[in-house]
Amino acid sequence: MVTKLRIGPLPRPKPVKMTIHLSADLKTEMERYAALHSQLYGEKVDAAALVPHMLVWFLRNDRAFRRQR
Image 1 (cartoon, rainbow, N blue to C red):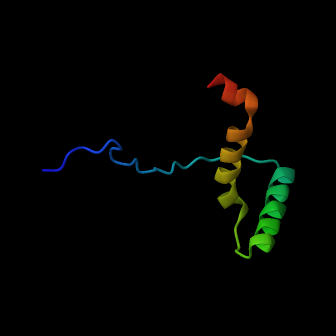
Image 2: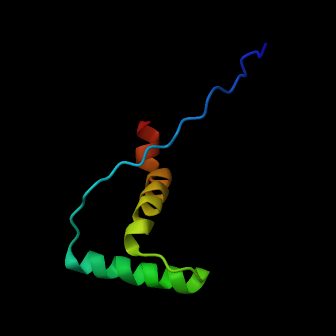
Image 3: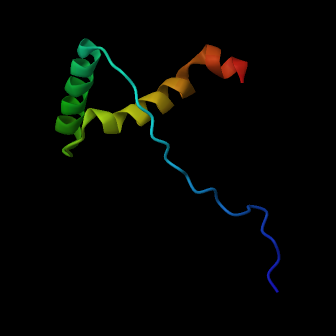
């Protein structure tokens, strides 16, 4: 008989598709950032792959947002 562990089943992250519209200037900047990231870390990455990581960083570091939680 197995007893319950304090940490239950781990949630399975479900990616959710979201469509956004960017200005042409922002798209260009995102592509430049992705190119720099690829150069710095030696692994090709496109701008769209960076967006979720940038949003996580932004939300974690926005002090006003954190205070409201």
